[in-house]
Image 1 (tube, one colour):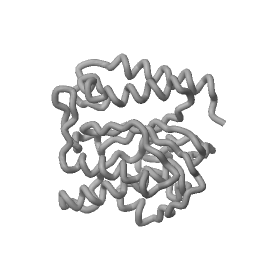
Image 2 (tube, one colour; image 1 turned 90 degrees about the vertical axis):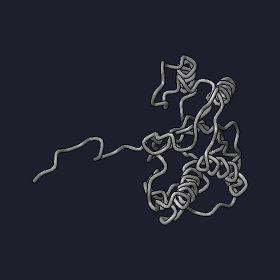
Image 3 (cartoon, rainbow, N blue to C red; image 1 turned 180 degrees about the horizontal axis):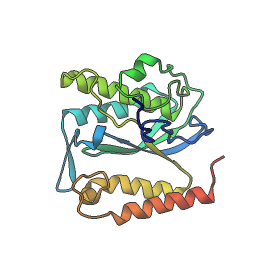
Image 4 (cartoon, one colour; image 1 turned 45 degrees about the vertical axis):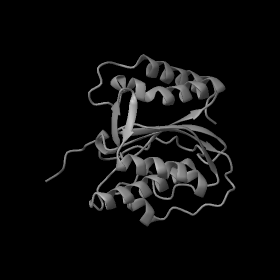
Amino acid sequence: MMKKFNPNKQHRRSIRLKGYDYSQLGAYFVTVCAHQKDNLFGRVINGSVELNEYGQIVTREWFKSSKVRHEIELDAFVLMPNHLHGIVWIVNPEASVDLMDEETVEANGHSPLPRGAAPKSLGAFIIGFKSTVTRQINQLRTKPGHPVWQRNYYEHIIRSERALHAIREYIEQNPLRWEMDRYNPVATKRDPKAVDLWNLLKASANENPRP
């Protein structure tokens, strides 16, 4: 019996920009979501995030990354109940870093990027981070191979001081605006600050097109 073509399963397109070198110097605004956007990492109470054990693992491993990967520096960061936002700087692409092998990628349960992500790139960092967190959380909850993260991640190249400032402010205020967060399954309304930020990023990209 012939299976009906499903465009969501076949020919899935990468959201990475084809031909763009994600190891080149610069700043990137990164968003990584929990699997099925479940509130896996904690909760927000009175505008403040209270992390559980899983959330503490995520935060610890995020900041540990810059100590073992000398090609990156970490800027503003927030971990929400079901996603994280962070600014990652690629500062030294010549720094030494271990290559991501197939075992590391598969440890995540879902390959978040095409195999063979360039070493010292944004993708290599995200693969390593997600895999390490997944392994530790699954050991804690005794669910080997169970997915922790959404298959991919989202990134925006930061192109101006204005955009950098706006993203930092958005990250800092994210817990205060949880009731309007697009990733909150019970959000009460749309966040106008988020709309303004995405419009700014879009305008910045048009003004400074990618190479």
